[in-house]
Amino acid sequence: MTNKIQLARYEEIIKQVLNNALNYEVNNRWAKNATVTNVTLTNDLSFAKIYIDCLNRQNISKIISNLNLVKGFLRTKVSKALNIYKTPSLVFYPDQTIDYAEKIESLIHQINKENK
Image 1 (spheres, rainbow, N blue to C red):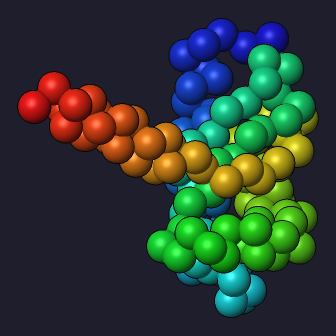
Image 2: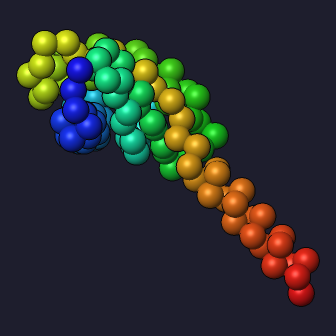
């Protein structure tokens, strides 16, 4: 069990290592388009939820499937950076915050229209 401060530090290290590896070391054309926006670790450090975003949102499923192909390489990079006993298993998810923000913005715009 790790405390919240240490967990947040590990999450930030994983985010930096993955973004660096995706930008400079991965040779997969689709995986290079990914950007890590957020990382969430479980308390026992066994799993890391990696939230991915890209410029072209229609290709997000293709990018995540290609990230799963280079998952072993990325996990090795994380393992070397963290220096902990158990390296977390990486699970990739599309980041939905932009879609959520657009939905809220359209709702606010709709409410403002109705009030006028």
